[in-house]
Structures are given as structure tokens and as C-alpha cells.
Amino acid sequence: MTFRYIGIDDDENKEVINNFSILIGYLERLKGVFKKMKRKYYFVILFLVLAIFLTGCSGITTPVISEETQINGLIGKLCVAASDKNWSLAKSYCYPGSSAYLMIEQAESMIASYPQVNDLILWMVPTIYSIDITGNEATVIASFYMQMWYQGEYTSDDTGKGTMILIKSGGEWYFYW
Image (cartoon, rainbow, N blue to C red):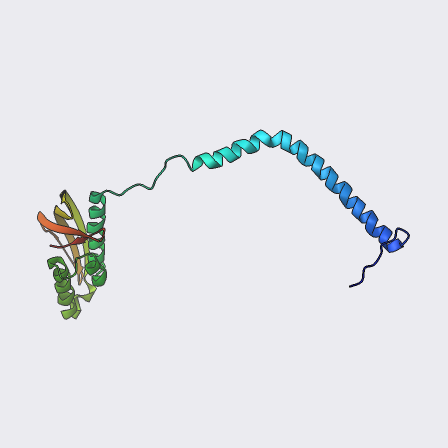
């Protein structure tokens, strides 16, 4: 490795040194500007930093959804899945092997066995009267208003009050009966 001596007499080196001194002067001026800015905006910056840190200490937490709200949502999801004739989704809201699961399978096979019913339009609206939760079991008293359109004919029916049993498994509610 060889080192080259930079001499002041060399024109090329004078230009490099001149550019370097200009850079040093510019940095010195910037340093002065930062000092003035530091004094001027110290309190503004301090306020913003405190605001950022204190927003994390506000105590806001994710709201916990009540058991009743979860059950209401599940009943609504089942009605939408049944209205859309999405049987696999409807079965996913039921506990596997339960009476509710078997009822959905029966409805699916009944509609599948009558191909002329494929154009059936079904709309279900639940009315929930009460929800009683005891541990991992919930008893729901509800009725369902159903509207059906089939081959240009409209019918509606109200099921009247009935009882549904839901169970909680793995932190999720499922229809059982």
C-alpha cells in the first residue's frame, strides 16, 4: 500500500482543501442554526414527545363483547347463512353432531332433493325475547319470521316462540338444540 503526500502547492489538492473548508464552514453555520432551533422549539418538541408518550397511558382498552351480544350475533349469522342457503357456513355455527347440526343437514338434503326449489328465496328475521346464560350453556327464547318467494309466489310464516340451547366450547358459542 502506498501513501501519497498531499502538498499545498499541488493545484488539484488546493481545490480539494478549498472544498473541504467550504464544507466545514457550512457545517458550522448549520450547527448555529440547530442551536437557535433547539432553544426556540425546545418546549414545542418536549410537548409533542410527552403527548406521544402519554397517549399510550390513557387506559383505553379493547372493549369486551358481552356474552349476550355474541349470542345475538351468532343467531343473526345463522339466519344469514340459512337465507343464503350456505349450509356449510350454517353448520359451522352448530356444535358438530348436535341436534341443531343435524337439523341443518336435513334442511340441506331436503332442498337438494328437490331441484325445483333451487330458485327459492328465503329471508329469516329473528326476534329474541330472552337469553339466560348459566356457565357454558345458554337458553334463548326466540321466534323467527320467515319470508319465502318461490316461482312468483310469496308466503310468510312466524314460527312462534321457541327455545334454543347454545353451548360454549373453546371460547365460542355454538347452537346445540
